[in-house]
Every structure is written in C-alpha cells, then in structure tokens.
Image (tube, rainbow, N blue to C red; front, side, top):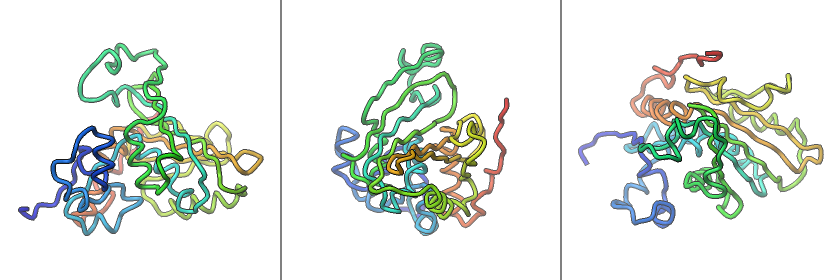
Length: 257
C-alpha cells in the first residue's frame, strides 16, 4: 500500500488460487487479493512480468528444480504424466530442528519422508499447467548438506525423437544466464549432480530418452539455498529494480570442494 516493491522469500504468495492455497497450507489465506497480484518469482518463466510487478513471490526449492526439468516439455504439450522424486540435503530440513530434519540425525540416512505429494507439488502444477492428478512429488533425504536433484520420470503423450527434445530444451534455455544443459556425453555427466552447482545460482538440466520414445527421465540440479531460494530472489529483485539480472550472482560453483 505504500508503493514498496517486494520480493517475498516466504511461501505466502506463491499460489494464485486461494482454494489451492487453503488445501495445501491448511487454512485460508489472510489476504487473498495478494495471491492474484503476485508474480511467481522464477525468472525463466516470468521475466517480463517480474520487471513490471509490485509483488513477486519466492520459489519452493523442490518446485524450482522440478519446474526447470519439466517446463520445456509441458510447454511443448508432450507430457502425459510425471512422477518426480526430489533428492535433498539437510539444509532443506526446515526452520526448526527435529529428529527427522536435524543434520546429525539425517547424516548417513537415506529416508523418503514424502512419497507422493510434497506441498511444492502445487507450484509445479501451477507453473507447468499439468494437473495435480498427473503429477507426484516425493522427497528423499540423502547424505548431503546442500542441493536438490529433481528426477522426473515422464510418460510422454506420443513417441518423440531425441533430436526434437534437444531442440525443445535449447529453445527454452539457450539464452538463460543461469540454466545450463548437460552434455549428451560423457554418460556420467548427462544427468546433473547438485555438487556441480553448489555455491552458485546455476541450474543444470539433463534428460535421457527411453528407446521406445515414450518414456523420459528429466533431471534438474540446483543449490537449494541459492537457485532454490535466495539466489532466485536476488535475480527477481534485479529485474524488478532495473538492475542487470546477473548482478551479485555470477559466483562460480565451489566444486570440487
């Protein structure tokens, strides 16, 4: 109301539909009008809208990774359904330490703590346009402090060729300052590892197509504390304020530290 332009790191204004918000967050939104005004803060999808916005939301870290993996396919209209598993480090454990989330308890564990419907699924559905009943989002705690690897097992609506998939992903991300496609070779680099982006605002995206042309594994890796949170917020704030989009975000990954 005072004319201040805001990028909100919290989850309060990520979802546009008040009914969807209530279903996923367990209660009515205190100011539903803000949901209609806010722009979802992922520049790769909403760059020009963010430039003009008064209010920009943060992004869920699991959602950001899953959306980056799936958005080019969803826009191309080739997705029948997608089963997503987010493999996450302990820094995604929430604001309060519990025996399920605190790093000393999580360390050396391999624990799936949400098998089907993490609440970031609502963001994935909203931003890809894929209905919730055609998506799942499970989350597994792995032996890592930072990072998200979103692995989407996709059933395609019709057979596709690998060359066409490369064209689709390159068209989506070829000019993006922070999204990089994994190479087809060598094979161990074709699907991204979060270690390779840790400490940076970068996202790595890769895919592998089944020989039948109908099944696909699409993967995105990000640092959950940067591209999955504060880094994307700074990127959005740069756009909103008319600064260079990459200002303050050009740090290189710290791999192999």
